[in-house]
Length: 246
Image 1: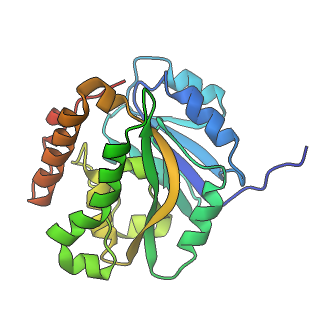
Image 2 (image 1 turned 180 degrees about the horizontal axis):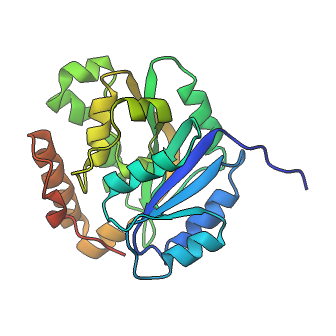
Image 3 (image 1 turned 180 degrees about the vertical axis):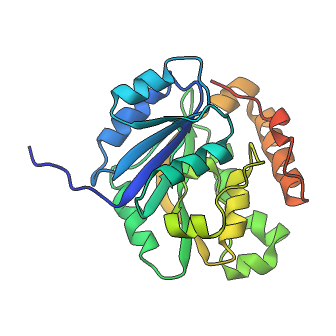
């Protein structure tokens, strides 16, 4: 069997009690061609077998201990020297050529951030919410930051499997460590100050577990409430509306 080539992309997975989701993401990463430069799983203090499972898969596991996507992402980026980074949620699966797409996208001068198009699926395919997530990538900045939309701002979220250059991430100081959620759109806003954001028209499949737990109306209301609170300057305390669903 021919060995896979290795990319310049490190995958960082912020995880917390992801025992059920990890086998799927492990199989998905094993199928990527080219392969990642490395996979770093940053654990926020899981009480299940997440650390054991990730370590058995050959991931570089960092037992950070502090839960929060922003601080876990920051730690993961610090742990690698790879020039390109993809932030992958444990319940999201990439197309097999994702890392080649990342390298091609970030080869363009002035492009600082990209993400794929998420399709929420699992118990069922959530076409309506998936379409709304695609639409708000564009209408969000048009309504709330129109001057930055013209400069290339698009709003991406963690389910988009966001990717960027490590150097650009470090240049803007990484994710805001005080943010437990909405750190992703906040990162879009700050990275846009030095370049443009690109939504890639390729599907990543991500779990619909929140919608299955809350129902579509409640889930979209929570997403909107958190998003509007962030848009009007609130950064702390939003996670009280956004509990963990596993």
